[in-house]
Image: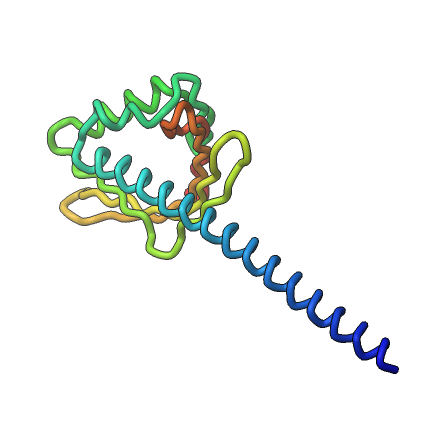
Length: 159
């Protein structure tokens, strides 16, 4: 009976140790996930601050030259089309503005590559003297290249 008691205590101690190890691994995973989330949120903010301020030079640095941009209304386009769109937005009188919808951002790691960003953003502009806004879903595929993050794929949908 004494052996049984010692065995139960050992099993209990082993279970607690495994639980602590698992909890510590989860905290490290959560910490890494949170760091990635914050990094992508920061990049998103910087990208669209450049968009909203019409900083075309900064804006275009966020995309790879082989960008694929999938749009549910406009089809498949690439880097040059994205830059041409930004140049059109930058013309005088265009007040198009983008804001990330609060609470919509999701970020997932892609090991050995980068991250997937999913969210909802709102674009607003003035049309016929009235503010017009629409909310749309998007996915950005980010690649980390030499410590620099670039968007390689965009999916824009639910227009």
